[in-house]
Image 1 (cartoon, rainbow, N blue to C red):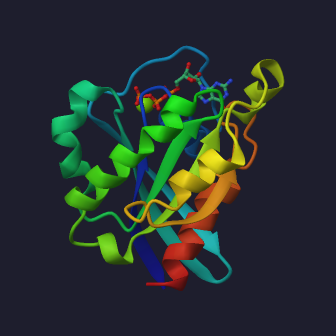
Image 2: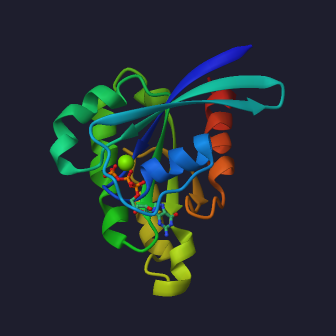
Length: 177
Ligand SMILES: Nc1nc2c(ncn2[C@@H]2O[C@H](COP(=O)(O)OP(=O)(O)OP(=O)(O)O)[C@@H](O)[C@H]2O)c(=O)[nH]1
Ligand SMILES: [Mg+2]
């Protein structure tokens, strides 16, 4: 059986949504920041044991100027990856707003949607130190609007944890469909 799931990448501008999709789908990484205008779509096949899922990954532009059109992109999502930048507590706290938006815009599937919380850019922690405490993460992860099921630490630059993160979300969706 082949399933099709819509997955959205959510989070503040420049947290690395596009970088994570590029790493997972094309095994590439771009150092220079190029903001996403509106939305970019990716497709990738994921095999979990003897099941196959085709993920349609919606990489949403995080700049505030795209806020008004975002609801169209969230609609009908089976799962969401809420991403923050390991070097920015602001990007973590900003997720409260993204949760609310996601809930409002994905009414159709919100109750059965599976969502994970992802700390990206962990390769930079050695330079700047750890600026995000366990307590901060718990505060966000417990937000009832977020419905966060699992946490992942990743680096789009190094590739650390990226495949595991997408497979983890796929498994959550498959196990609870
Ligand atoms: N060191 C490091 N830099 C990263 C990582 N992931 C992304 N970046 C950099 O962070 C910047 C922003 O990455 P993007 O993927 O464009 O961010 P985005 O979330 O898609 O931004 P918007 O499209 O504006 O919403 C780029 O300069 C990337 O090279 C990472 O894991 N480590
Ligand atoms: Mg982008």
